[in-house]
Amino acid sequence: MTLTTKQLLQAYDVLTQGVVCLDDNLRQGVLVYVESLLVEQGMPRDKYLSLDDLRCDYPFVRMGSYMPIDFFSADSGANNVAASDNDANFKPISIKLCTVSLQDGPRPAHCWQMMGTYRADHVIEAINALLEILSNKHYFNYCATCNMIRPTGYLDEDQVCEYCCEELLGAA
Ligand SMILES: [Zn+2]
Image (cartoon, rainbow, N blue to C red; front, side, top):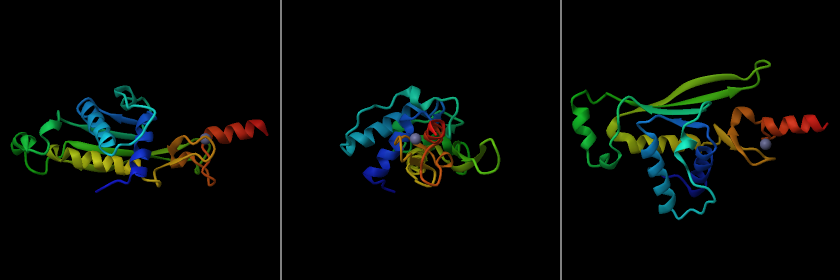
């Protein structure tokens, strides 16, 4: 899997927006991996990801692990040693996505779905899956008015976010 620069930029925008929550086992490692991806691709940016960005109260994406992950030896198989005590199907890492629907009533309906589970030694694959979800226009897109990235459930058919809609209504 290779993300285009544009996709990677969108994923980064979602991450800096504070709608992605990573647990203590993953936060630091994911941040380092994503930052190194951007440096590798020489991507210009005006903001840097902070650990606080990845710790939020009302997330739309949750990624966690039941056990500590050794990011630095993910490729060398050190996690295999730990995992070999369990069976190969033990997948402690999970990614969940919350989709929003404004259609069915006065209040937004939130629905959490499991997007994938991963073995500890497949953590890089898991992070790539996370980035793919964040860069997917089906789940997140930019508001046509304020250019803030939002879960698509909060965008109307003209791709305008709920904040801008309210402002437009207020002005009317
Ligand atoms: Zn907007």
